[in-house]
Image 1: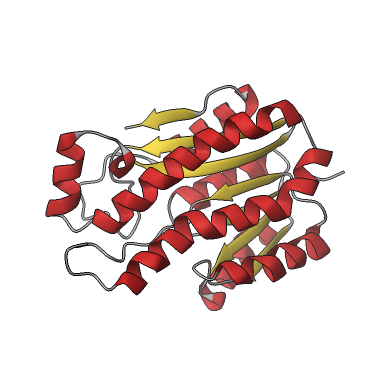
Image 2: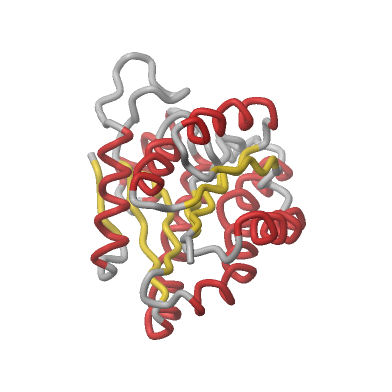
Length: 230
């Protein structure tokens, strides 16, 4: 049976590199993002290369939308083998004056919708135990260090920092909850800017392909809860 990876929060950087890496290893692709037109354009090159790839437009800040999303992926491509969560929100940058709705959106994208997706794909992952996984893109703002907190406060990353910290803890508890079921959970924490993304102002130092390689490495190894890329 073909293995399928669902890439949530698909874009031009890490998620694209992950899709390329896993498709080169024989995976079908379910690509998820808000912009339906851009998503369709992203799928086309994969299809032209002979990869089974489908676009699934979805607002991942709406955790209720995850239910029909997972159902649609399963109907189109069959059981899901790997869930890759790359979605994030940069809202609520200054928590001293941010609208609480923006913080709620950030937490919904990074935590609530991820939990919803995990719950929905678990039956598939249990069936594919030993080769199934939940892979999460982490960020350096999650780290508990004074210098990191200073940077998050200075550069308007407070909401993202809180969300990534919660996501980091979520990765750990899910790893230990699911490992005895043959389901691997791991996070690649990106300690810097990735080339070719919207955050790159010409000073990014991390290659997206290097991050994707780390995801493939931990997926195969299936032991590390967190690894860093810098």
